[in-house]
Amino acid sequence: AEIYGEQEPAEYVYRVVHGAVRTYTITEDGRRQIDGFHLAGDIFGLETSPEHRFSAEAICDCEIAVVSRNAIERAVILARGGVLEFDLPVRGVRPATRPTHRGHGEPERLLTEAQMRDVVRVIRDLVQGA
Image 1 (cartoon, one colour):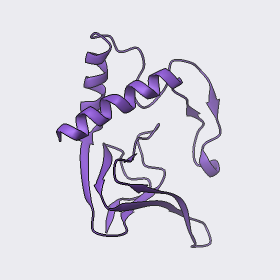
Image 2 (tube, helix red, strand yellow):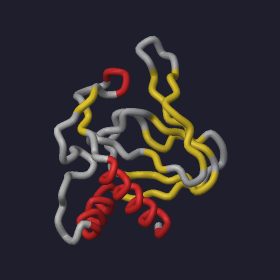
Image 3 (cartoon, rainbow, N blue to C red):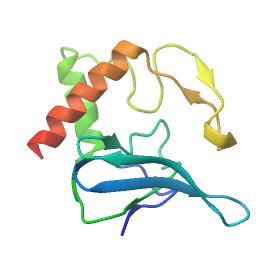
Image 4 (cartoon, helix red, strand yellow):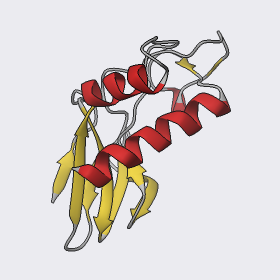
């Protein structure tokens, strides 16, 4: 069953409670190109743009925890002492960029490793409470 589709609004972040999820894109010639597999405990759907770059589908019976992007942004603000030091997840503090995966859209803004650890910790806290 589809969880979200490519180019749909990325309004939520997901965690696999149990089961397995596949993320993929459909190539111009109609083939499915697998991005990855997500198993229990994995977080997926966190995008650096307002839309999903891939589709996601359950490949067996799954339980998926869902948290809104807005809730994550608010949690990061609180975790940072009420100051938003970077916009999550649209752009990072530093201007470092790299080409997007397989040439989709504009270059992504990269989060620092410390920022990503903070984000993952906040997401895990949120989805475990969901």
